[in-house]
Image 1: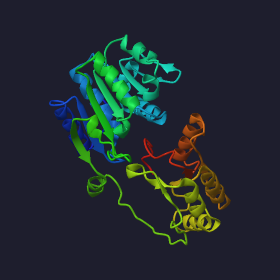
Image 2: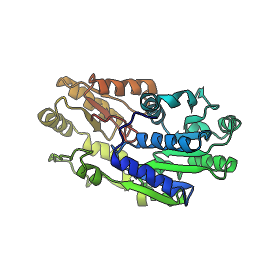
Image 3: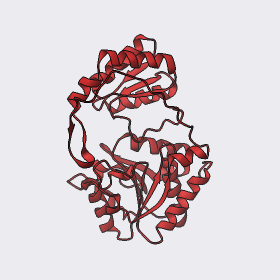
Image 4: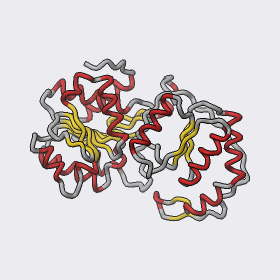
Length: 318
């Protein structure tokens, strides 16, 4: 048994997922950031194994952080399952394990070698997809199809905080039932999340000259024009001034329009005595992991990035 102290809504979500599987194989659960989706996923794994001890299970995600964090949570709260669990990602290949945490890139590789390696040890009975708003993509659907071909009775759970995709492609293409939906307002009203305090800062920035590219759900600002409009000396100085007045050394994540801007902001904050650091998509994964560890330990109080840490970030104390 785990040593998790379950919150009432987490039990409610897990019960709803099991009920959803009574009428459908592909079930969606929506839970806001901070609800404890990783805990819920492992809770479902434990309950599934209690009923069918020999089952093989895969937790699938698209980023290294979404693989290492759930595995760390398993070590902390479900140590009895650890000997049966492994990772399939890049050079790590624990395809023989009963419980596998894997990246979609590895299992869905066009050669299908890792998929074949894994299935030679038996069919998969349960597939859980983390950040499942990505599951309508071709790579995820290929993995689902391969697993279902090997086992038509495959149970599939998708978990996300953001069921609305930017491209408006409906998750109903993959999921037959939305079993649960616990939002931010409920978590705040029940005291599980703190109430947000919003500070507005007046600037002289105008986006009137910034064009919009794309169409429909893919519409966005022209990146080059946006950077030119927003990343000005006056704006950066105002952000730093506001940070020093209202935030100081409290844990902070800053999002910038450009990589260059992220590193510039971190440098300007450091000049004011703030332990700030920046990272981008080209920052090596082990270095990104070290930054997050340093942030959790208080070595850094502000991390600046460009859409790098927008999902799967497990930093409860922030």
